Length: 114
Image 1 (cartoon, helix red, strand yellow):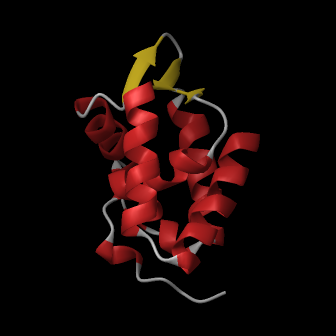
Image 2: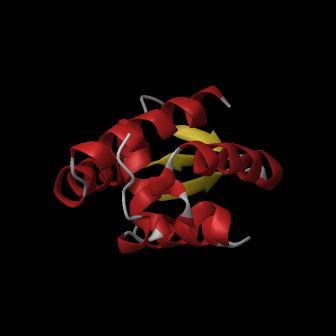
């Protein structure tokens, strides 16, 4: 696997690209579960390393997507809005090369199974 320079992407861009790959439209809001999932993802996929670099990277990425109306908090889950799905898919197609998209897809598979 080719190492991708993850520093050229913000955590919210990475999260957006990963969410574009997932079939599910919601995921847990539980901080401990999110941290565990992203620790595993960051260890396996170099592109996702920014999530392991700071304690608040996950929450900052989620907050950014909430601010754009891509995610909404619904009880104990975040839900991807229809507009959010369209934004995520568009971002994935325009921002990421083939290697990065493969890493996002691998990360999404881990995240979806967590």
